Each structure stands twice: as structure tokens, then as C-alpha cells.
Image (cartoon, rainbow, N blue to C red; front, side):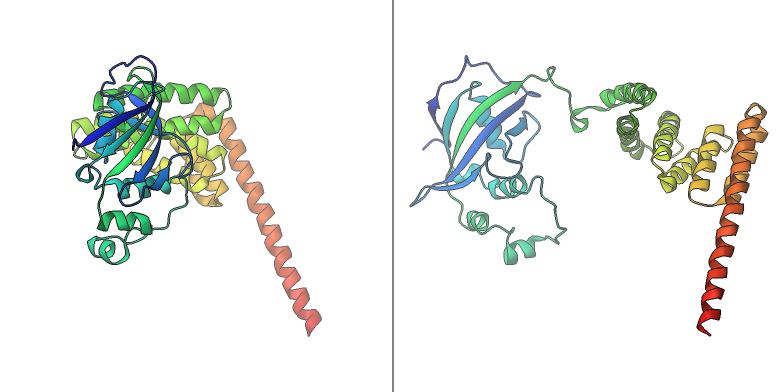
Length: 321
């Protein structure tokens, strides 16, 4: 018997070859064949209940699905009976698809655990122990060519990732100007993730690493500003500290760290940062003086609250005695 036997259930549109990099969207049913024909999975009922999306040529764990999809036309529904040698990995793929969108609990896994406890689904554990032919009923819904969709980060090569960084920064700046701060933060975060992944590949302080770091620091400052607007003070402190490690007199980093110190109530540290900004950039003196006055006012207010709290404690103790 052939490794894959196809039977067309519903003809689709005109067949067009599906090339590497294309993205195929399809619904599937998986049937276990044997003494009885048993439904294992239905993409409309498991996980997110959404179509499967497969990027052709990117070595998906169940390689036979790429072969199957390439044999189909958009709109076609076909049955494929596949020999067991080609579907050994299906139980693990199925487990992943079933759990999409669910909160995952971290579970220790190793070869011994697999033999003793299985993967958590009795029907899939049985497929692992007793491999057999599987039938896939596939409905090919859509095929997008590689130039027709926005690629995910893992699909891009190094040159494409580097090209994306300034685009994300510019997009973030535009969104920030429009006061769409959360979306701007997402853009800056994506750009930083790209740069940090690339920096891991380089030796720290080498020329390539320094070039990437110089791209990273201004984006990190923008990212910190978005965090500051969300009152995420400790994140701002962390990011500004990173910038100041490499540029100790960066005025923006000092000012934003000062604001974060106020929010986290480190008034002495905030005063140091603001005074340093004033020293480095005298033209900002008026604004910095307002920040320093605010700290003094907050200190006075806190001292009064502390005194009131102590007075209440003493009054309560006196009344009790």
C-alpha cells in the first residue's frame, strides 16, 4: 500500500502549486483506523477551535501534513490515509493543539515520565504504545503566498530582523505621539526583543555587540517612558539603569529614573538624579526646580501623616490604659 492514499471528497478551485514560505489555513479531522474507525481530533472542537495554520517549508513536527497540503487546491476537502511510519509524532502534535489557549501547568517531563505517566491523554498514550494508520480529512481554506502576509519574527533572517527594528521604532514613535501608549510600548518591546536576540549571538563589547547596543538604548528609553506612564516604576528604574551603565550622563535616563524614584518613594535618590540633570542641562532648571519642590512637599506631607498615625497609636494606648 502507498504511504499516503488520497481520496477527494469535494473538489476545490484550480490547483496552484504551494511554495515554501506560503501559509496554509485548513481544518482537519483525525481518525484512528483499525477494527473500528475512531475520531481522535477535530480542529473545530479542540484548542482554540480555529483552523490550523501551517507555514510550508519550516519543518513542522508532523512533516506529512506539508506533503498532504501541497497535494490540494483551495476549497478542496480530501481524505488521506497515512501509514503509521509517517505519523509517529502525531500524539505530541495533538497534545499541543488540544492545549492551545489553555493555562499551562509546568510539569516535569523526561523519557521515564513518558513511559510511566504518558502525556496526559489516554487515547494519545494508546497511539504512542500502539501506532496505527491514521486518516486525515483536510479542508484547505486559504493559502497565502510568502509576500502576502506579515511574517512572524521567527520566520525572518538576521538582515530582515535588523531592517524591522527602525520600522518598529518609527511606528512606536507615531503611536506615542497619538497617545496610544500601550500600542507604542508593544512596538518598542518587539524591537528590543529582536536586538536582544541578536546581541546574544555576539561577544559582549565586540564591535557588532556595541553597534546593536547603540540601537537598543534609545528604544529602551522610549520603552521606559511608556512604563513610566503606567506607573510601573521598578521597570523604569531597571531600564534607565541599563542605559546609564553605558551612558552615565544621559539626561533623559536620569530624569525618567528620577521620576520613577519619586513614584517608588526613594526621595533622596530622586533628588540626586534631578540635581544631576540640572547640572548637565541648565536650560531645564525651571522644570527640575518644580520636581524638587514637589519632593519637598511630598516629604512634608508624609511626615505629617506619619505623625498623625503615631498620635492615633498613642491615643489608643492611653485610652486602653
